[in-house]
Length: 182
Image 1 (tube, rainbow, N blue to C red):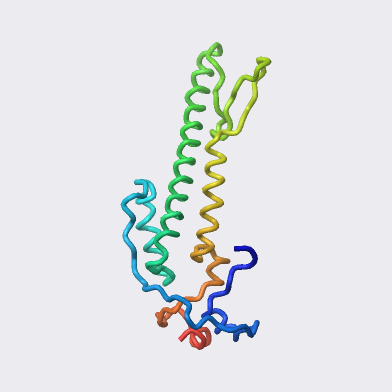
Image 2 (image 1 turned 45 degrees about the vertical axis):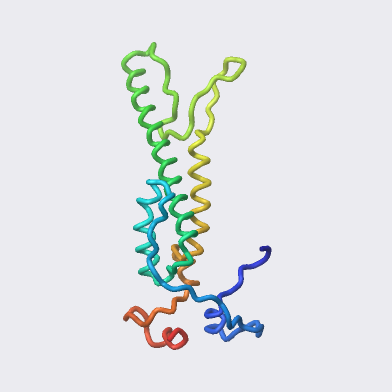
């Protein structure tokens, strides 16, 4: 859908319905629960699942309807970690090749930069070119997806300031802020 995201009804109520538009009296209220990891997600995403579900449940924003969104968040985290591991492996290869080259100046120069983000290649005319490793783009794409889903769940300081939960007072809110949410 185009345009701004709709403001949840409970946030409109807290703000006094500034737009004076009709409120959705039939907005779904999914049941709160900690869903189990789907059987089809990757092993790396399964490792992230428990941690993500625990944090979201403690924040009071997790419902059974969020299983698909949490799945995508966990897969993005797994992709980000895998790309980072590949880049670190390239950096380790650089260190090994650089050490060999120091010991034997006739040995080839390292194929990767020290941080593992670039690799050396030879172009058609025989010149050396340094190109960005594909894992850098994969990690960047995963980072973009993670930021989007973290914002949806309120997992960043600025996103958290826009999230309102229906949880009972647990000693974390003062009476003034509880006035509208109780």
